[in-house]
Image 1 (cartoon, rainbow, N blue to C red):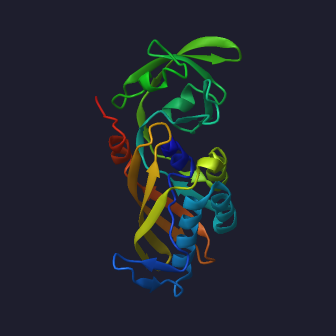
Image 2: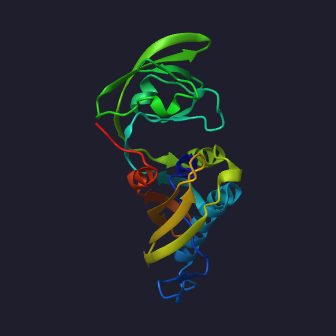
Image 3: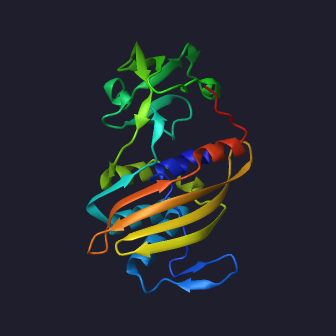
Length: 248
């Protein structure tokens, strides 16, 4: 599912032209008077264009101490290996989350709430629930099966530059580019720049087309490097366009 690609792309750092902003009437507003706006626009364009382009942008233009703040969510705080189609292997565990107390990178899920964690059952595995609600599962670690219980919680994290680059590297470069994208608005004052954009993508398995609007906020240091970046999107809207429902 390509939505995962956007999560690994540091929660969707969107795209626009590096030299101008087209409004709904096709007019172009110059951005050359603001180095921060220009960089924010180029950064977002790279995120929609390709994995290598985004990685190069982050390496060159994020400060060494820079951080990225992904959108908050209710969950556990781990990611599956997107390259493994046969098993549900934990690729990364976010520090200081419910999952960090139980899971380790390399753990393989055997079952979730009694349902075998096979490729065929992935859509049937129930990880949903209220904050604090436990999810029982069986994992395999070092060749041995063991039962675990993870309680859902609010996940609010700050990723370092190295973590952001690692997240990007986990994506599939062949599936990276989006179908279409537009910029709705770019606003900047001082060292803070907001970019509002939207993109259109097609879900790989079903062929269903969906759109998402994203707001990105960049904070720059005096040297013009990104020291903080964050985004807010429409995850629920994306799922609903593909026929998914959210239940308690």
